[in-house]
Each structure stands twice: as structure tokens, then as C-alpha cells.
Image 1 (tube, one colour):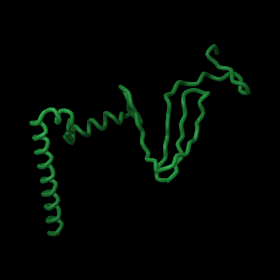
Image 2: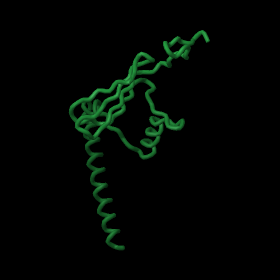
Image 3: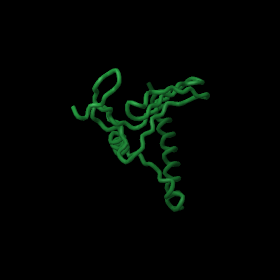
Image 4: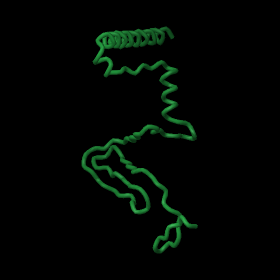
Length: 130
């Protein structure tokens, strides 16, 4: 009971948990509400209306920033998918420094586009045969 906090009108209540600042924005309207809260009991939700179109975006930063869904890490899931599908993510900083890497990346991107076009043509030809 020593960690209980006295709130006027409520009596003793457990201390407020510590949260980081949270912002929720909505999208699709010319004026969309934005809901923001700080930390603790003294920071209620506030609503601000801004002009212009907002887009929905969740931005998590930090060393271990992640979203957990039923105990599964979204970051780990995306990394596993990229590895399994062999998705290459170009390192633009290195490509700026090393012309050879930039040339190799350009050759890869051109070959990838050519192969996608060929696959599309084969799919169209197979559809015609049916």
C-alpha cells in the first residue's frame, strides 16, 4: 500500500504506469483529428485539428523498437521474410562511395526488370493457351 497515490475524489489508487508519449493520427480527411498524450495521470488525451491531409503512420524509434502481435515480433518476421525471399536492400551510402557497387546494383536492377517483364509475357502466353 505504500506505493498508492492519493487522488482527490477517488482515494488511494495505484501509481500511474510510465509510458512514452503517444500520438495517433487519422487519415483521408482534409482536417483530421490528432490525439496526443504525454506520460502519467497528469497528461490526458488532447485533440488537435490540423488543416491538410494527414496520413496514418506509426513511427517507432529506439534500439529495440518493435511491435509484438500475439507474442510475435513484427521486426523479426519482416527480417525472416526478407531473408527467405532473398530481398536485397541496396546500401545507397556505399553505392555513392564505390562506383563498382553502384554499377553492379544497376546491372542487378536492370536484370530484375527484364526478368519481371519476361515472366509477365510467359504468364500472358500461358493464359492464352487455356
